[in-house]
Image (cartoon, rainbow, N blue to C red; front, side):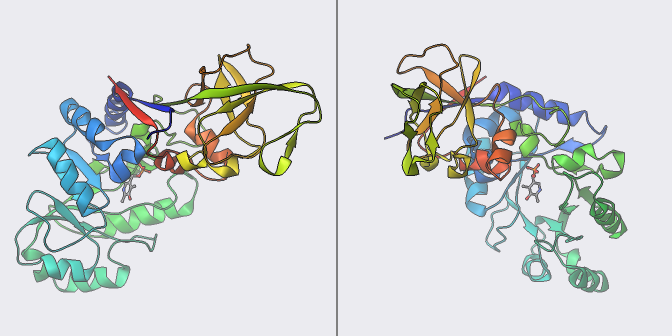
Length: 347
Ligand SMILES: *Cc1c(COP(=O)(O)O)cnc(C)c1O
């Protein structure tokens, strides 16, 4: 049984965001990163919309995600598996080779692959020593149909961070003649022409998250999350609300109890921090977030009826801002939105 909350995803806004990103650096192709079920928003609905708009490159994290995506997309578009190298990947799903061991396992098959270099994040990709080894053994790559060399940036959401230029320069210094290159994810796409490459790999920005934190979000909003009020009550000043009685009404108040909770990805750390929109009015979350319920002080909003919906994410409540209030990022808010919501995709 699903929770009664409704998560509405605008496919039109995702496609518009993809097109907009295509204009950020002229000549740069733009892929779509679809890992974690398109950041929790539904790869099965989103991928065909992007394909029909002209997107020809898709990235996923795991092999199983790649296989599922191929079912949905049909033949044609590139599907690359970022971190799930296995030597039995089919011909139509390309691995990202992340180590010399991956390269050796793929060598001689003559099949397409991408190669990831670690240029300063120490997470995935060939570390510097292996890059030097590979340069000394050029024959290794001869048996691989190498389509892209890529790297991933650690600090692109902080434009002034010195590691941005360092990683870029290391990437440029790695020579793979005739092979296309892929550098930027969402935020790095906005760092200027020096960070352009043959193929950008945005995820977050497609889904409406702000790739330029601290500046106005250039992306269109994609997600609306609404949940119904299941009960309303009038309380007098001095009445506590929720587990732990952490919030006590300072005035006579109207409390709306809403059918969503931390089991639905509405993080418990939003207790005393979150807010929602009710009929265009910002209403504060009061008391603790429960597993399936939230309590909002709606005293200052027009009197609602049970069954009316509050907006948990959408106009007036961005996933980025909510993430910040929860001590995390919009990415985690989106990918954490649980399976109980009814998901609706609108054109
Ligand atoms: C997740 C990921 C991306 C997309 O990052 P966003 O910040 O969501 O645009 C791109 N490349 C790699 C290697 C990733 O892991």
